[in-house]
Length: 128
Image 1: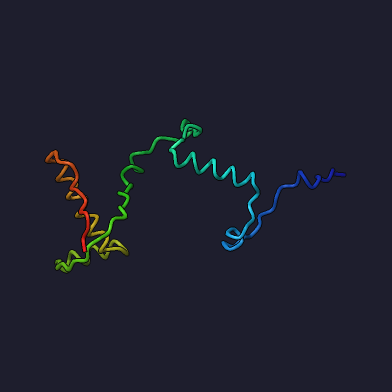
Image 2: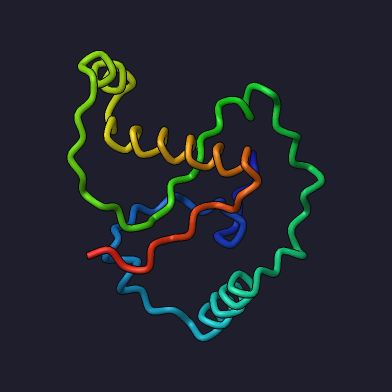
């Protein structure tokens, strides 16, 4: 007969939780201190405990498929006329054709600045 596992050595089952359950959870003092310590390390940029040796290098295919992270800067609404073929092409790439226009223009502007040896264009202070 197979020996039964004690309650303390049984694998924990998954528990379904809602966001309200997590928000309303009562944290112990020890748990709060662990979270605070992790938050302080993260805020300080302390990643000394992370072992990066087991992370494989990115392949050429992975690098080629990367996209630029969009800035969370405020945008200015403008009206622009484009050739219908250009609009059809942008829309054929999927949702977000207006954002794609901004990305294309931003990439072009940054490439021009790099080619001329200039720094990136300064951010406008306030546009109202």
